[in-house]
Image (cartoon, rainbow, N blue to C red):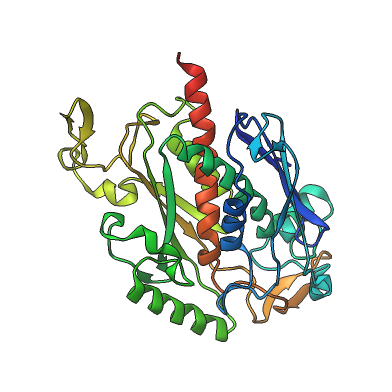
Length: 358
């Protein structure tokens, strides 16, 4: 199982949804990076369950402990180890599916691959693992802030409810002003009401998160196989429930002519800029200094509070009944996960850029 990501700034996560703890080891973090515990906890709080009635009601403080790699508020250059102890497991909620395959979950595929699976909340396949990524991503964000890089993400679509505004038209400082994490209040209220309606019906809904990265200098990226957009895509697609990734003009750009799509260069105050940004800040797999923007598509949560047909490990037809505590829509809690994965990708490329050129 691949539980490690990164070439220089590496993370390895561990733990299961209903195990004793989850955590992360960060290797390759330079010495002297400010380690702000409140900042890391803030990002974990944005992801933790129980935030509102449209999220899972599992109660986890997601408080973390530092095991190594930090001294007097700064990283030491040695591996940073962080652990988050699970506090509110209800493993009995999953006894009814111990030998059943839940539709659209990883139950069947894990069994086929390993010959064994932890059915308690999905074990290692649970999105609870992403808390470890968020903790590591918060440290990566601190590194990037020192280089003038800012990362933010927001919910831009829930089901068919779409925020029809470009990110440049929005006040991205207002992302956390509401439970949905959509920076447009009117649209956010509609999204909240719809998610709540779906929740009451025992169903689930998916949507889209838009990510924006500002301040990345030109020159980050490693062609040909480690293109910047390729690594961003891999990172986002590694998040539970993600079904698609696009950057820049994405699929809509395919309808344009080359004369419409090309980003013309010009100079201003000695700096090379582009008049448009259909490229999404990346050309040839390398950042060009413009804003990097992308979209991440999430499927509806696989667990729903309705009976569904399936089979058990013996191949016999069974009915799977939805129980336990689950998000009717993963998007609000996925925003900090998208932020974290973007930060991990960029922190790694920042260090790779420094090592590749004097």
